[in-house]
Image 1 (cartoon, rainbow, N blue to C red):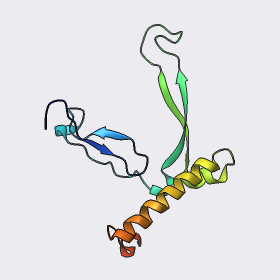
Image 2 (spheres, rainbow, N blue to C red; image 1 turned 180 degrees about the vertical axis):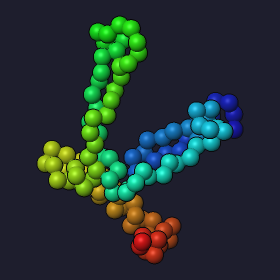
Image 3 (cartoon, rainbow, N blue to C red; image 1 turned 90 degrees about the vertical axis):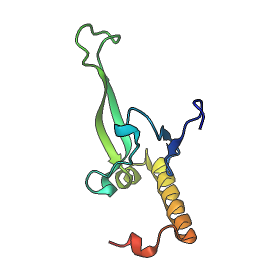
Amino acid sequence: MSINEHVYVKCLFCQMNKPLMSERYQGGRFEIPEFYGDPSNTGLIMFMRQSAGPGRGHKGERTGGWVKINELSLGDALEHSEYRDIANQAKDKLVKLVRAYLAKGIISLEELKD
């Protein structure tokens, strides 16, 4: 591979990507992180607040930036009319992905059971 070519890992779900090889990742190796706790509680909608800091009306110590103030899981987002549409889109994509992998034999029904 030439110096101007790079390999990326692309999320099967959201299609965002990150470089596979990079000094940012330990040993230059990308690893997909484990879920923290119950995967059904993984956030889908995240609420952030921007704090004051250099360049935003505050001088001195670098304390500003974006801070997460709340998060909604897929299940929680389905219960809120404001976020239901995006939650249904995420759910539909997840179902399509699992069905396609089942059909191609990439995953099995046994793997989906506890």
